[in-house]
Length: 119
Image 1 (cartoon, helix red, strand yellow):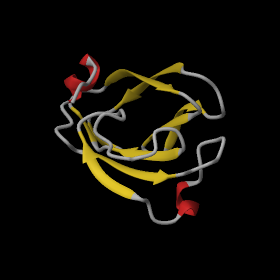
Image 2 (tube, helix red, strand yellow):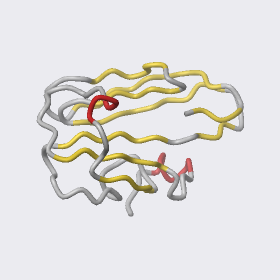
Image 3 (cartoon, rainbow, N blue to C red):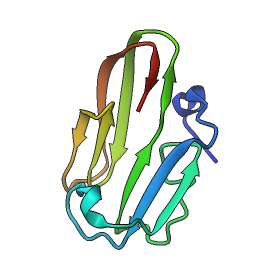
């Protein structure tokens, strides 16, 4: 599995849980609760598609979750890159909104996290 340097530094060790919904035809990030049961559930090392087994590479919705241990309160930078939308929530708060139909786009956000575990 190839991870970026930043992803390697968080040492997820296969603890990123994902839920994949195949053949999703929407144009925005869905309400995952309304999609029903996922077609695939698993764990991977990185926040990318390398460790996800899904068969459909173009029409899908993917939800990833990780309980991130934070050892020191400081400002952390998060970055998303997605083609056709993504959203980043930390502790159920929207941090990056890159929703909608578009080509590959990078979006960054800085957020102060306190010591402890954050979802």
